[in-house]
Length: 165
Length: 165
Picture 1 (cartoon, rainbow over the protein chains, first blue to last red):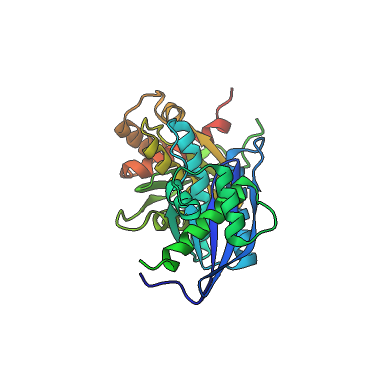
Picture 2: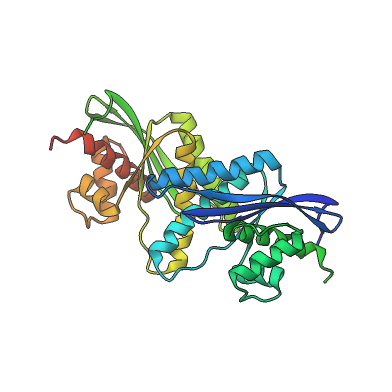
């Protein structure tokens, strides 16, 4: 465990073919600071290749604007349907490649681990995650579900290094 | 059906997380001409995000070198295992985004349709596809299975426009 630099920006990503959540936080000597969050929404009417490109462009833009050093990406829900898994894989691949192309280190976290990190319980509900993200980052309002999930992945990554083992 | 321009280069891609085949052909007034083919092989020992990036970089390099105008991408085999489907989806997403980022139009073709196009039979075996690709492009030797599949997708795309319906 080498620890984080004194100050580092972490990009959290919750990928999806329809909605990809993103959130950037800064870890400054162990303190978490909110930088930005939002969603990349793709149009179902566009060809799938275009939607993947929109995800790549969206993640790329967030990185260019906010200059995070690392990306923490939520593992997608393992659908029982191979067709859904295939689609989700495409979306996640587009997001991961956008981070890699910008030279970010990419870390994966399971949904269970993310929930555990922010809510202390691996089976926590979406609204618990939203609430805890708001509390942990001192936000005046709750981010959307997808943006909150992305911020939660970023917090999960930060906690790997903040917590003394 | 608007037809292809008098001369156009087509990039065929057969994506996979381990081996991605690629092939470039030129259609010159209805005649097919072989330009290049090969494989992008990722190292199983590398983290998955790195392997996706290698696929993106590999496809990007082929496009930069050979300047195709369109990409024809084989739909991946729909694995019955959601975990395999997810992995293949990531790889295909990385390849598609590399094409889109270079401004190529991206077209999808099912394996059945590709086999039908080159071998006249949707259930054709791998070695039949290899053989027919060799014949159709007048090659002196058979390309590898993955490169042949990629060339077959490119030929399949070309045939959409060459054949009078």
